[in-house]
Length: 238
Ligand SMILES: [Zn+2]
Image (tube, rainbow, N blue to C red):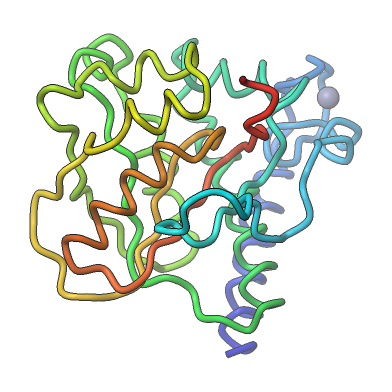
């Protein structure tokens, strides 16, 4: 299994090196120079990156067993992610996907467990998609699929009555978020089996991951994990 991980790690490193060969403005400090994943070397080294471990709190339901994230959602990452979501910068997904893929490979190699079988992005309400022009979770999922060689399938949809549920999430407590997202999703096809990984931009309470994972398991998935660009511990959002 390590041969596969070594090959993938080499590919990720090559992608990163390709990205680092680009001279331009650092996304974070604005300095001109060589960039790595869109950042200058100083900003890249200072990125708040958690160790490659399962970030799911033990008191959170384990439908979505493993949570992995590339960075903590704190300055300067907050501003960087806002550029991706709210300032029409979809191309940032290429830099972000490298960071997430490196974290995923480190964790799976360390734990000696195979990578998931399928990637599924968290869906976005149609109205928000229309306004933004893209679903950032889907862009990340596509890039991760390319980097890791795992097929991605857009098989989750928001239930009609929950179209606006995710939009209000940031204003709610953890318990409210869990209740709000309960039953929020449906699958658009039956799943036979397999290990599915849900991709989102930010994990906070895990309400979205838990609800989506419960739906996938009810539809036939054997196991579900969650990957995100950034993680913010739930306490800070209560
Ligand atoms: Zn910089």
